[in-house]
Amino acid sequence: MEENDVVIEHPNREKAASKATKSVVLILLLVSVGLMLVVTIGGWDALEGAKPVQIAYILLYLIIAFYVARWNRGVLPVAAALAILLLIFAAVAVPGWYDRDHDGFAQPSINAGVLGLITALIIPVQVLLIAFAMRAFGQAWNVEVERTPAASAA
Image 1: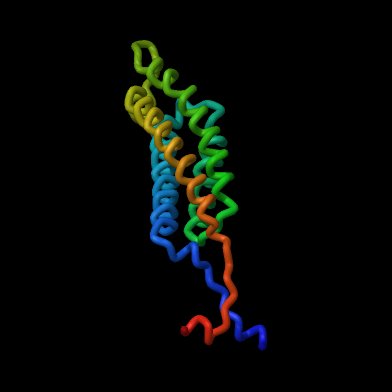
Image 2 (image 1 turned 60 degrees about the horizontal axis):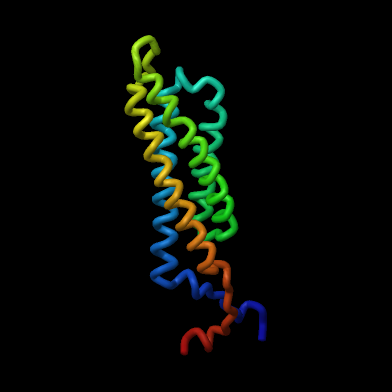
């Protein structure tokens, strides 16, 4: 048997649950990026030292989304770990945005109260991302089965 006669299949990628979980993880990553973009652009003047962190998170989430779209299972624990950190950052930042919504504070491009709400929305999105990334990791997308063309046709 020649090496060219072997067909590699990924049976766990064909399951409906795997496809659905992959889609949910992708959507949650992209929703997270969208929320972070709104907070970053809307609060650019008020972010002080958090600008590089925000930009790094946006880029990392986009890179992770690219790899998840290609069925790469290895980035899922990284996505969950980053989601935990972002959840903590968002939980700490929410009161700060609401504090800026009082008299005497310069308002960012988007009202600070709205940015506080958007930052608060990041928290449940990250909780869902952690849960679905770990569920996807457990689905073993990386399992490969070698078959010969004759066995695949049967």
